[in-house]
Image (tube, rainbow, N blue to C red):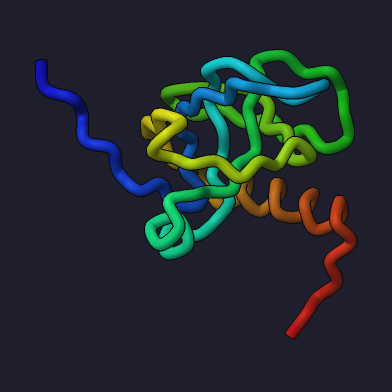
Length: 118
């Protein structure tokens, strides 16, 4: 059996990851997540920043709903994790539209109180 080649994930992509092991209230299991770190960082470090996706809304202020051909759900912008994309079995699902990505970034900006920095 030939293994599928693992590609370096890029920002704006939804990919499957194995989130286990977890601690406390972290999202766990095999689940999709939005990659928010740039391709260059991911390639150089073997890591990537992600926001996990869940299939059910709980009405939290940092959820971002999305619908793509391959998948729909809710991005949890306040559950950011830095994962080893190779060790966590990263698999590409789809690329999100710019508006959804911008909405996630805006929520992240509010969450960590980032002002416009130049």
